[in-house]
Image 1 (cartoon, helix red, strand yellow):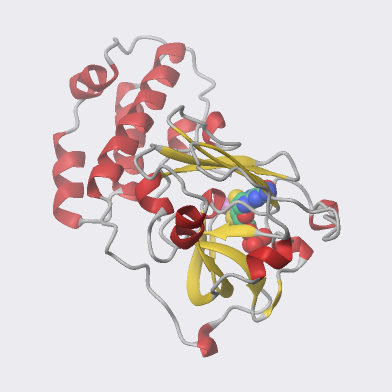
Image 2 (cartoon, rainbow, N blue to C red; image 1 turned 90 degrees about the vertical axis):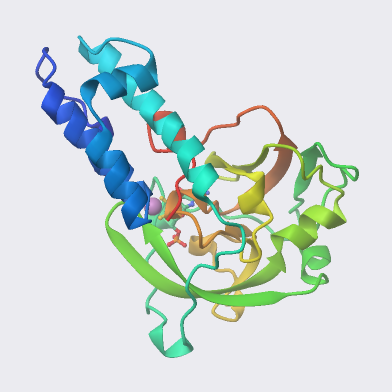
Length: 265
Ligand SMILES: Nc1nc2c(c(=O)[nH]1)N[C@H]1C(S)=C(S)[C@@H](COP(=O)(O)O)O[C@H]1N2
Ligand SMILES: [Mo]
């Protein structure tokens, strides 16, 4: 995938204008409100970048650190701008993308095969009820439905229909400490990611059990995924085996390789 801010440059010396261009790009990509965006990108200077990161920009290692700290700074800006009452757009059934694309860090035939009979979702960390969940117990909870757009940073987006349990209902049911900072996810394919608590409690964040009215197919994350239409594709974990609530930053598979952690869409 191409995430310009984190592309490694072959040249040993640093072109400060390029660093700034990259930083401006990531900021404008991640801040959707036009006036704030143009203010932030116009006012960003190399000195400002150095100030944000607390270090001088004179070699490539430093640049990596600076870019990483710009990304963490971006997390804070995005968290501050996130409005829990703003809904992601929804669409009519006629606009559903068929076939819906598959994506993972491997090919489609390598998607994990999880056996429903053996499946147990573990729920740990800052929750009152640490019991494990079976699929039929999740199906017995009140279900919701959404037709929303999934946006992948690799350059595609698609509209799909997902059904399942409102994630805030689930968090309440397990007695999650909703003042905690993070909810983390571990998946059957060694993928992992984490989200901020306000996003976990957002009305459209869904513990997803169906795709297009059918049991969630293997390629789209059987037995369970979490659908978060306010976030980019890589923050929508499939094949989830464990959910935990924590105040310790859990990172993520792509986030630990430089993708922005907040990852708002
Ligand atoms: N477990 C798991 N979840 C994952 C991924 C993955 O590789 N493994 N890839 C992410 C990325 S980058 C995208 S775009 C979406 C793709 O979901 P889809 O196959 O339903 O389109 O899954 C996300 N969740
Ligand atoms: Mo993606």
